[in-house]
Image 1 (cartoon, rainbow, N blue to C red):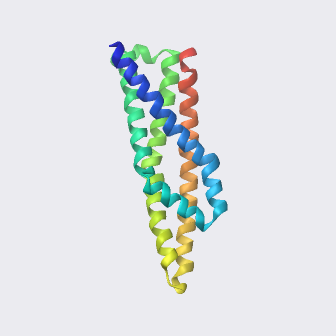
Image 2 (cartoon, rainbow, N blue to C red):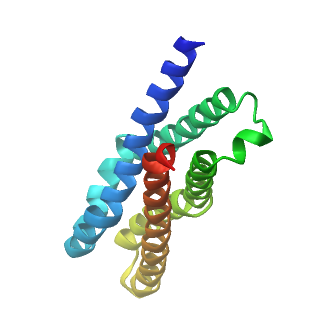
Image 3 (cartoon, one colour):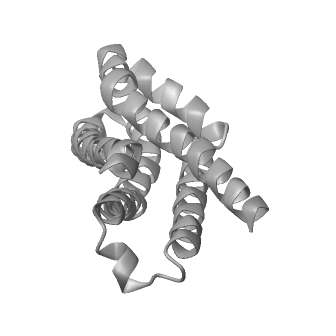
Length: 170
């Protein structure tokens, strides 16, 4: 049992640090810098996508949540209701719900929008002059949606990390 707890905790913390840290970095530093770069920002994102960004982050998120649920299962004695009545369990639960909401927004909005933005950016770059303005409007709309969803994901992950950090002491 001890080996299982150690393995789940290690996976949960290491992958969670990567996921939350990556998304908070994107929200606070990378996205504003990419906006400042204009069209060159798209090339930076293409390089990240080429290196697996749109696969690695969701996989780390899913594994983080699965490891967290596994920890919660073991520590709660199989999700016993009396455990969830304790202040630490409530705190961990709030953190877990925030992380799951972040995953939901990421998978249903952020990732699909990033994929569409990649395609729209490429189409705008190669569009004939008569179509370029319309294509650029689509790129702008998708970029704004991506920024908004990234901010939601980053904020939800900040909430999750904060609750995970302090819940043990409630």
